[in-house]
Image (cartoon, rainbow, N blue to C red; front, side, top):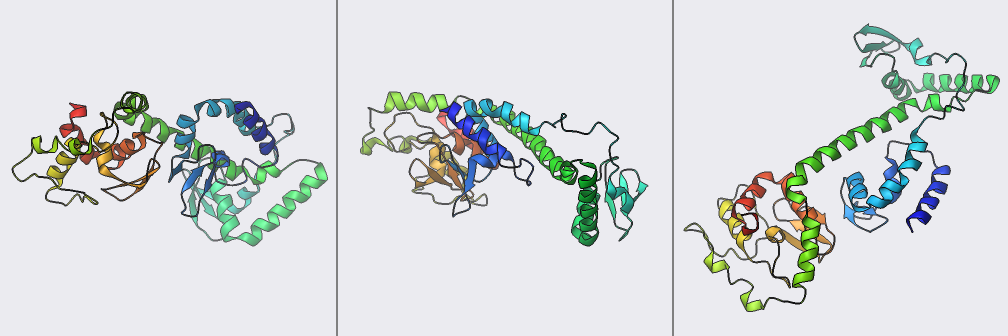
Length: 316
């Protein structure tokens, strides 16, 4: 199946330009729904961001399989490059150096930060602020191309290539930092949930004993049964007691062992979409898997998660 998908992708990449815009090539595997959520075309999971992390972790085999294809598309084609002297960039006619990594537009006197030898910023400036000059230069450039037979298409898309590569490098760095930060809390979560599914699937908890441990909580004098909590604000005077109660509260369900993380989310679509009680953000999950929920608490609500670890029996 993966082999067939890669063949289809190979044909797809031939008819689209990788550098046709600012969006990452990973968008070939995702689309936006009516609610502006990002939907994975492979597994139909919904998310708001981190599509590269989703693709790399959830579809690892496919991710590794298409890497040669991606590298082939991103590497410059040295066979088609001219062996003659490179044509100087036309942007140099419209800017002068006024300081270290700074150039001034000769048309409107605006000063832009530009690394030495790179004219992407000035080219974008001329294209957006002095469009008539940009169009004139493009016409002349393509006219010269027709005369000498050289391909200048890459020259007109240099800034887009730089932007895409910059975004990919930054996205990869953020991904690596996230993985390192979350390793302590997320590692083994999928394996644990899978094990719990197997062990507890045949042992439903009687409804009358689902909350039997609530009365025995080690709570402060004012802590009691808070009932169903739909929202929990950081300014709530009972924040600590409520987190403590939710952390030690037995989760209703069919499994004997279940992480208390579920207590901090409200189901919107069972086994698919859950709302955080701290920020009311919707989180998509894999069925019976709390990894995405825990990741959200670790990253977005660190202080609250530290309290959860302090009180929840599963972390002690």
